[in-house]
Length: 111
Image (cartoon, rainbow, N blue to C red; front, side, top):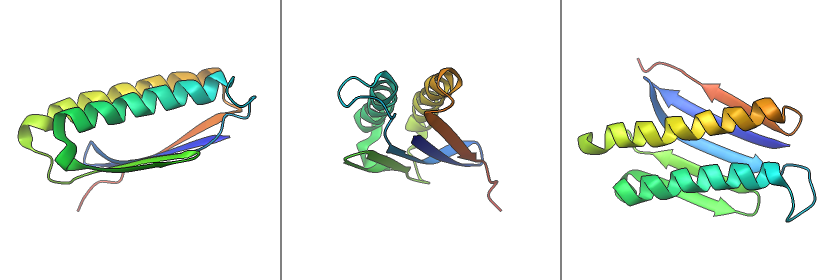
């Protein structure tokens, strides 16, 4: 099972954590490959536009991204578009393979 946790604060995505595997044959699991492609492409886009605003890590079966609360103004919209598009793609996969991927979204408002 692939678990994806997304933390949003005041409409901005601040954290993404992906862990687990799709449950298929290693090297031939289309669910795992799709999730990896979408999340790693999003991370590459964030790093391209504002690497100073992203902390991240990747290990076997795990990818995490933390987005700074102080993203440069000129990068805020770009980051929002990249991460929103990532979520759209992940939700589509989760609808097609609900037994292999689950997405948790924490949308707590800042006080």
